[in-house]
Length: 350
Picture (tube, rainbow, N blue to C red):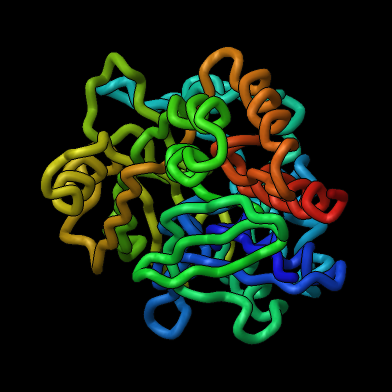
């Protein structure tokens, strides 16, 4: 019978590909119009710009995504970061940050050695890996459908599809944000669902802005800057996308990406106004693109790993089912790949 993968973010797509490689029939169910989750790349002007709406890279020291690119035949598209170093804006001036200080200011628990190894991305954006995964899956594997309930049966699960139909499967991989997974699991085990309801997510709001290089009066170095909490600035951080990775903008142009406090009105004009002040920008941007994710980055509270282990132990009493994604095993893109592969292998083992 078929294994269902519920959710077509990078973790779900990786799980589906891993299951397919093992000779299993797979059906991916995704309620959104496109696969990829928060990985979104736009390539305006015939691909002369590469604009990321979600994550733009992964730690080079984390091998899972790089290995997946090799397995899919796109290892030649992996590129390393070009600029190094970051700055901090204290409300009056930009000052250089030491290696690893940027991660500490953002609250990430990352070893200095991992930061020193740098970051990697894809030549034409993070969507390269999503497009490669979708292309590697069999036709008709991906179906646009939402799942409202899952009921155990003698042969696996009966999934209730939004609109009234049902699908019978032998097992499932749930690759949804933790609160959505909790709603799906309520019909199986309330005690397994409850810890997932407690996983919270930070919203994300970013604005990508394009400029001609001569518009920017400040000398741009490094990968970008962070704002100290005491500066009380609407712009929390800014990455210099076309300095960080090659090929992000045409010659003589710059692509900047500002991260704002969630809920800020008029994000485009606010981002430009603040960057114009900090980076001495003259004139208006050539264009701007706003991306907002109400459920952007999961926040792990103390004891998360132990609670997740208990959830997985309870789910072992049911027909094959596994969880994967940023809400469970790490928020990084490469960690999501690892989580998806592990989920597929767990379902196959059972």
